Length: 397
Image (cartoon, rainbow, N blue to C red; front, side, top):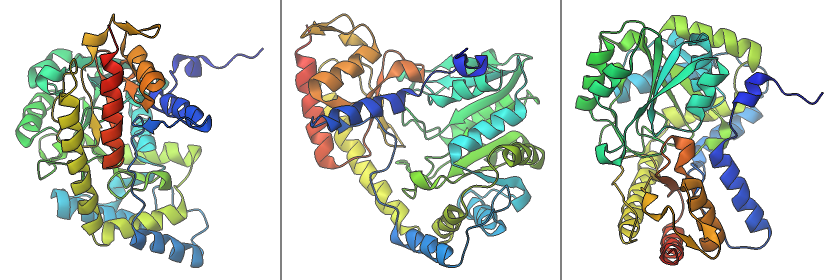
């Protein structure tokens, strides 16, 4: 009687949201928990963006927008892509959605048939494989460990492509690792993809502006594959606008039309007021973006330094986003206070109960030997969290 669909039963709950929920429950009990589990900037949305939203309310932007978003917002995105990325698009090639998450899912649902394979480099963001399963596709994972800075090689990509391959999902800067593909690394992947004309690239660039190596590089810059690249981006991370829920795709018009068709039956256009706020984000001063990036870089340097002082953790130096993804497998098999660490989920639960620090085990990201920490929090929280983690791990025998 109480039977959910097979489609829903195939899905796993979001591990990041689950850990955040556990953290909130402990906080509600009065326990001082430092939450490093959520991928969300701790800054407030800049004032000029909030003011644009207030003006939009006053001007009665309270009705349905076109399904792909207001033309003015899509024009602002076209201008951003030209000026910042040197990429040419028309507004017909832009579709806005309720966050980059919906943008990724729209694209997968518009492209994938049952039995189609979608290549996903691991570690990966938790929702990618679940979205592929939602579309009845088959996730195919390419493992890229810490020894290769969590980035796949052209050789690995070539070996993973089969006649059933329909798409590659590439996230740079990466969630959960913070790794960033250089132009030359992307060129190597593009050369492989150029030989396989049926493969679409879904390029998740939501962390574009949180980048510590200078210029962001998009795989869409390579002319030989541009007509098979769908860029996914949005305002959530760069402008501290996670709750406003505005993402977009830029890509071939036939794919955009398919996503519009899906979205028209599913959610319609995204929030009208949020769109006007996003338009102000793209057309206004970008000083706020750089201020936040500088703060994230300082925090990154701090957490890397402190993590490297903890015996047993293997730590790389991420080049973007706001995550650290250390290898923690040296603690597997150890125990303290009746808790045995068998895997990264046990490791994360141990840190939550013993150190009162919320992190996320690497199993959900396709890297069971690692765990993820978000440093989108204050310097003081980072220092205190790493002290607690160091003390808790020292108890494991």
